[in-house]
Structure formats: structure tokens, C-alpha cells
Length: 299
Image 1: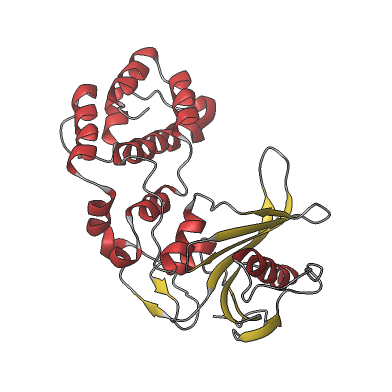
Image 2: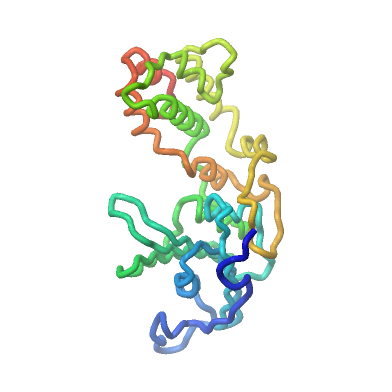
């Protein structure tokens, strides 16, 4: 692997608060910086590097030490480098910095986002766009990035917001869309048998299930299984980013994930199924579309 473009990981002392980031407060200063000041310091140190980073934060009174570790291009996603990793004891906080292009309805452009979490569970986010106002958010974001920070620190994450049945049906609709839409107007007509054969719960070499029986099998997942049981089944198949921050220790996925973080990790790249379903219903013939709707239990 090539050498990182920034100096090798190490701890660099910094005085808090940074005179460049905020004026000296009036009155007495608190003994320790808050998570919001720590997020600001990490963001200030990381932004000029213009790359994704993991920051490990140690504090001693008003002295802050930042360990900045550049994330290799080998990692598929920034938070994935934390899967299975736990930092050495004694740290104050952990942060992820993501630098890239923003995509969305408000238009694209460069953006740097820093999310920092401390051992107490408090989280702070800093969002900066060149030429724009820096945004600071106190609420903990709900998503895989915040989950990865909390699980690396051994902290719990919010419960799953999606059921197993919704996950399975989202995967199914994605598979149908990939089978149909790349063909454009030349797409072959798909019958119910074609749709059922690529359902995650269907044996492609077995008999074609009816929409009702397929819906029953999908609904049974929520009664008979859980995200925890799925994690146990997939434990040895979970592949992390392959690169991790220096130091610390590695633990098994079943010990590292909890139900909420695992569910959002599984769903992190899944498209919103509702618009996918609408497009499919518009493309399928009426009878096949009705059978598809009859087979769904979560939408």
C-alpha cells in the first residue's frame, strides 16, 4: 500500500480553545473542552488536508492531542474502516472527517463534514462548504457514520428503524429493477415467474411460489428472526474495509455490531424502495404488477 499523503499517524498537542476558531471566553474557563470544541478543533486541523480521516482525541485539562489517520482509497466507505475496531483505552473522543463533493437537490460542490463522539455518548457535527457559513449541529445524526463511531467506542446505537421484511423486499425490488431498467425501451416483458425467481427467499430451482405464499414467508421473518440472528448467521461473511486505524484491537463482528448499527450497515446502500416500486408498476403489465403488490408486506 502506498504511503499516506500526510505525515504518519501521531499525536499533535493543541491548546484549547484555538485562538483562530473562537474568541477568548469571558469569565472562568471550564476545566475540559466540550465535545463541540473538540469537533471544531478536529475540523480545523483536518480541513486543510482535504481527505477522509479518523481522528483520535486525548485530553489532559485544557491540552488536546489529536491523532489524525488518513483513510486509504482501499476503503469502500469512510465509516467502514471502524468495523471491528476498538481504540486503546483512555481516549476522550473519536471523530470521522469526510471531504468530498456534495450531491443533492441543493446542488453539488465541495463539502467537509466532521462528526465527533465522546465516551459519554455526546456527539457534535461540523459542516463546512467553501465560501459558506459553517454549520454546527448538536443532535446525534441517525445513520451508519454516527453508528460506527458509537460502536467503536462500545456505545449503544438507536434501535433498527426498518424490519427484516422491509430489508428483504427492498433488496428484491432492487434486483427486479436491475433486471429490467438497463434495457430501456428494449426491456423484455417480465412475468411473475421472473420476479419470484429472484426473490431472496426463493430457491431459483424450486417451484414458483404464489404471491400470497411469498408474502407469508416474508412476514414470518419478523416473527421468527431478528437483526441479531441475521448477524450471527453472517458473522464470518462480514468483510470490513481491510484497513483500520493504528493501535487499538479488533473484535468479532458479533461483538462489535449491535442490532441498530448492523441494520443500518446492511441498508446503507439500499435505494428508497417506494419510488423504485412506482417505476416498476409503471413498467410491468397490470396483472404482473398486481401480483407484485400482493407479494409485498412492508410497503
